[in-house]
Length: 75
Image 1 (cartoon, rainbow, N blue to C red):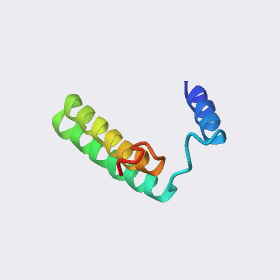
Image 2: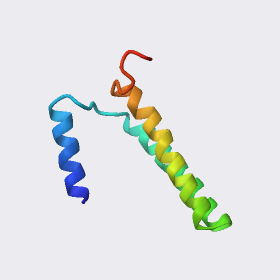
Image 3: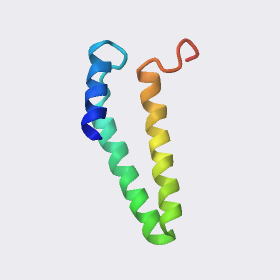
Image 4: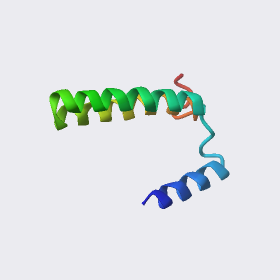
């Protein structure tokens, strides 16, 4: 499945639907999100860990969408 998403992302980048993002920012968000997710799951169980995981994914989406013009002329 990862191969499919990599291929789709490569095509979207090639045809100008996406642009590259800041790798350092991605690393920072991924590391902080991973630590928060792990701690929440260990302390409060699977449902809380899942909620943190989804929250981090939505936070990253909120960073990537404006970089790629996902909000159009609104922002």
